[in-house]
Amino acid sequence: MKKQTHFGITSKIIFSLFAITLLFSACKKDWDNTPIEAAGIGFIHASPGTAALDFVLDNQKIKSFTYTQDFGYYAAYPGTRLVGVAKKDSLKYVTNATANLISGKFYSVFVADTLKSTKLLVIEDDLKAPATDKANIRFINLSPGSPALDLSIQGKDAALFTGKAFKEFTTFSSIDPSESYTFEVKQTGTTTVKATLPSIKIEKGKIYTIWAKGLSSRTDSTQFGLSIMTNK
Image (cartoon, rainbow, N blue to C red; front, top):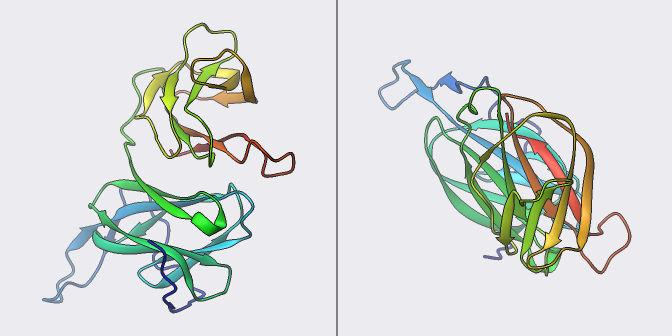
């Protein structure tokens, strides 16, 4: 939903980044000091060709992000929260949405598509520990106008994930650690590699998201490719 509502600006992050337990003390209506378990929320700029953006939570600026950038999770009170994005320092929403945050759970908010068609993709992140001596990984197609995509590892026959259209995503799946993987993305049903992500170290016990980014029609910094981030 596109809205041009103004919001307040603050130089302060709403809540500091907490440990994975995300426990903090907050005053309730009866003014006791019972600890409240927060939700974790992260923001990722995935809109190709769009300048720096301000991510906004409950009408307060969190931080400015440039394309492909993320800063990990922030703690937020559980409940129905208003999340949004604005051009840097504009004080005016480009788009916003509501997100139902549950205590103790984690969420990623991707700003997707090009500036004229920006959308927010809110995904719950399953950060349960990977199996012994494994890592976890998922794939998201965030390349506007792209066909369905497959993600694979160079040199392996079977794809990791298949048939993901724009804004579709997988659950986290187990993967063997490696000092150096080269990930490949292909159009579903073809064998032609559209882009690679070389020399990626995958460590046991960690959790990763790989996402297709950019535009197939471009050859600059917004060209089609792959990005990776560490969720935990």
